[in-house]
Image (cartoon, rainbow over all chains, first blue to last red; front, side, top):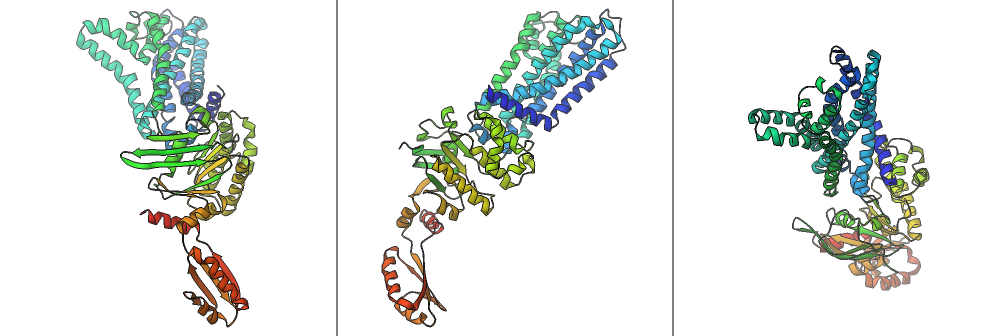
Length: 273
Length: 298
């Protein structure tokens, strides 16, 4: 435990010096403020409070931004140590590889949590200013916050796994961007195309819900939209949210970080310095 | 005494080429052992196997009675890699504090450690601003953490200035006196010659020579060189008494087999006051190393 905390402290310090803390906090704050400003037009008509509307918009934002920031922070974690030549020495210390990864995860997750909380808090403040009834949306915001952190943990783990597989920062960066595009953008497009081609057949009724649950980003979106009252305010995947039980998306959101960490550990064990 | 490091019949191949071929050695507590060899002779491979960083094909390796790379072995072994590298964004103090924590020691010991390697003034500067020699000293500082029983040092003095090198070997002497076993590789043969107890020469993955410097001298049987300075005007008489000597002015140089050394010296002393001075130059480690490596076809 001491070794994990020591690693986390050092990694957090490095993130601070590399401006990762500043970059991710400013990024989240900026996007959240832009979203709440842009979303201020259609208010009142939906019969829900402002904050719930904001949460629905923030969900769509987080699904792109949180994995991106997580992958940007993590792709260098192992490949960078290999390139700098710091890995052989580190591995001669009495510290297990999983402890090294957990330490890095803890530090990067702290940075991400800081960014997410700052961004969401600013958006919430903006909502409270225009609509005092926003208190009703607070549970949805809290839910969005912890699921965002878990989504971040999933993509941090995936980033470590890719970093271990690539062993070179440039290769790891390419793989990370590929994963982001694939999981967050192309996956949904693919599903959409399959649903259209299938025209209401077996895929749409049987496979489609599982395909959504199998992707951590979709599961995150499903869980937040299904649990929130603001489903009506969201389009796209939100429609599917009604057909999948809430506990199933919750399980997916909770299991993915563990799975990603297990993958990362397995990949890191294969790295010979 | 149980050896700190025991290797027998160690073999390791990379893609069909033997990097290490049936290598055996032991390192006792408190002994300083130098590992010599050309680039690619297998020194770094052997070190990485001792540290448990890479697996090996056959043979046995025990480090402090444990399997190499096991948590118990890692807790007792310190390593200084060739070209020690650290994260440039951290200060020397932060980096050492981190390594201290990983070994379960108090991070506040970082400053005294850096002081011991002469980095006290730069402790709060980022490692990115350090020179190569300073990074090497950070590497040395981390190798001193927690009284290791075995130190594996890969070219520890590369990048150090002559004074730092002397300080470094003085540190090693202290560690060895406390019972630590030291295995170091180096290309700087003159310093190894003076500051280590035993020498191992690897060539093409095989151990071609092992022993103290005196053992190696005997084994190589290289000629001893004698340097005689004649008193004014007596050079010709001395040259006559020493057939085979090469004369330059009043100086005579003579190369003789090891076995003839004492007899030749007796003949020179018999010349009495005609001789101003004598120097006996035994073959240096460099000569022995070149001899052993050449014999091995390198």
